[in-house]
Image 1 (cartoon, rainbow, N blue to C red):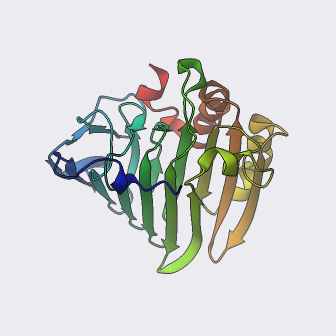
Image 2: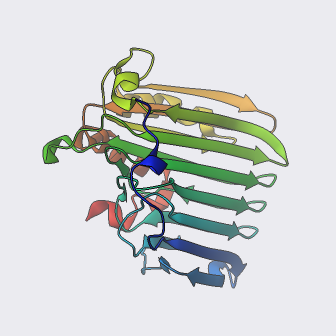
Length: 279
């Protein structure tokens, strides 16, 4: 029987509709907030940092997402700015009574600016349905560090994801030119798909990390030393910039984070690891 979230329960339940906007500009030699807008369950907090790079913590006060919920984040980094974006906690994708949960992120990065998109892991539950979309527009000379990590059930909690639908879409452009695009689709028999050797070989934790920078290739050896032989990383020259792509898989979330933490700390420069990651 094909799993369709819409068949599980009648619609009509209250749904999350959350939207957050943040724009930063260069002012008096530092990055400053120009616009901060939050609606519904979307909240943005900016704790004090000692690195000189502002850090924005994106929060979904609903405590998770289920079918029919929609969250939308839009970030603009002005010329010469630097910004780190993360989440308060792991986003939980719960069983869908109807429809699917959707999360979209749009990053606009001006010339000479750098943005790090470093959310904590998304935790996917059994019989959930989720679509995640990431759109990044980089101007000439802009740089970005982008991470998405997903855990299909927490083994320590006795969770097992058998059937679910998961979609992940990335589109990264620089000067209007597509420099990175990918689409990942899994489900409805998610556990069987992940068990394949061409997928994760049964591992339930995975992450993709992308660095867009003219100096991306210079970090390749360091990245490979951090992630080890079990994972892969490659670097390319793309137009007037470069990109480094790393993919990681692990048997569980703990094993994944053990490699993600030093990897993010390595590639995020002086800003280092986001505060919420170390709690």
